Image 1 (tube, helix red, strand yellow):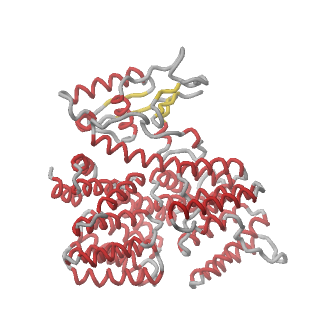
Image 2 (cartoon, rainbow, N blue to C red):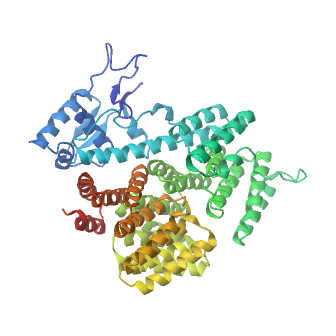
Image 3 (cartoon, rainbow, N blue to C red):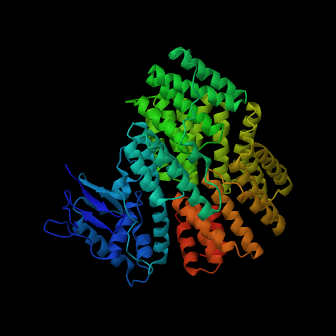
Length: 609
């Protein structure tokens, strides 16, 4: 049966089950529409707060100047109930519950989004064409949601393009990638997918033209060469196996084992080449399960050993899921979904990340070691989006399962992320305990690649406790090890910690120097970028630098599109210090939605309330 749609993207409207070719708001049989922009605002606010929104808080948000805010809210709720026959809006906190036969576009983009969801159905900005300057805090919330949903649609288009490419439908992949590039012309991943799709269609001329056009755009607009990944999409990176090598399960398994051994020994290039050969042999042998396993193993190695995050690894993972096609539990499918979730977390697409990780957990039934890995990434996502209680619960369970499985590295990973949560919330003793355990695990496993993250956070924990000498020793070590490894993410984290350290010493010139060092690399994991921009703004404000507004605006845009709620609050607080009175009110308002006493105290000291 066809559904009635609540469309909040684009000009808001309710579409009947079978809309006529003309405007669905016109003509006989068109469903009634809510009257007034504030009714649409209430509907959008409730749809994007599925856990509920308090009546008094919602009324104050949307009707700040009304003589009777609750009365104004009641009128708009009655207006919504008049037209939404398939929805229930009730309770305190208020919740929107859709009945069967009713759907809402922004809900479809959430964590429960189906893998086969058609992204072409989602066009336009949230509440497009409506103005809410008379409700400045809501206007600020709306701007962040517009950023986030635009990012989610772009990611959905990219995922759909990759899935189409993996399913052998390159024409669809090209069309979807082109749509994604219309939304984000500088997105190298989408450009690479488009090039791959054109190559698969046999249209190499257009593929080369796309590479050239993308390079010209980067040079003209950004003054830099395009990412190499776009050019690499013209060629197949798989190393050709000797034609005399038999393609069967035994040879595939041999190359998988050899690749794992090479990676363990630190021979990354050799290990990746062996894993690529395993993929090629599995394809020739027609071993679908082994092909899926080889693709996931290769993707994991590229991500975690070679620092790859682009379209190539996402393509491997989508191809693995196409080959595996699990109906129930599958360790391989769970790992593929988890890695897709991990990529989405690092790229700041929280809704897509939550959806992939939910699928991963569904496929991981009966595999507690894999569940431990998934829980750690779910905890990372919850922490990034300022849902700290959820983060602590997921990470605590991850550490427990890793301990039962005897996976010391996974334990250290979970402990480090749990320490990060406690550090952000100012629970310094708990943070120190977790991070010390993580450092012990890193030392026992000789896991030097992960040490900069843990050492940097432990140093920041000492810094927050006022122990500057202990902080300096660990933060300096984190920077040196990150720089030696060439890890852009850990370099950004360590540079930000150095800037905080020198800010605590009152050495603004040194703090500015470290901000500059941190901004040089471009970390894949956007949480690091946001944390660095936050301290960059603090340093610029303290130094009276004219760059403070630029840093605050960059932080706000990044936090908004990535759903990083705490950084959104901090960006508004910085803007308030720079003289924006509406930003001060927004910072106070948004901070109350986050369970972090450190953030609440920081905003209260700066903006009062």
